[in-house]
Image 1 (cartoon, rainbow, N blue to C red):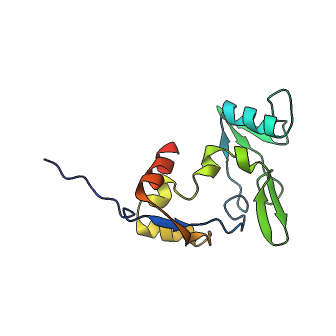
Image 2 (image 1 turned 60 degrees about the vertical axis):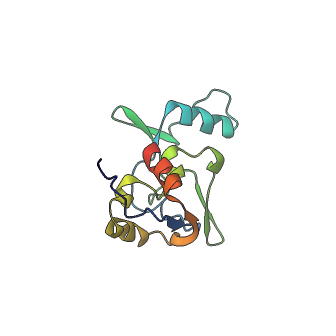
Length: 140
């Protein structure tokens, strides 16, 4: 009978958002959104048509991404009093909801440690168990 391969984070990992905004700003990138995400965000913002305007969403090939402010911050990132907050937090896209438990960050302890250089919440706070981490990893 084959042995199941254990993952290096089998005992869980600590993470608690410090509201630094590093995952939502800085270098340009993509925050991928589905049609369902767009509809939820639009409704959350009080729009009746289920759409986002061109200042909030852009087409990238066959996909869509949230736009960025000059400097790379997500269009919905708000910075106040040294803290960063998501303006659409309750309906944020799956990519945002699953940070930092992305496959690339979970490849190895080195990958996790490298990502944690820019994320002070990694390795801190609440212990997320293996099952929860895997549920989030699979969603991405």
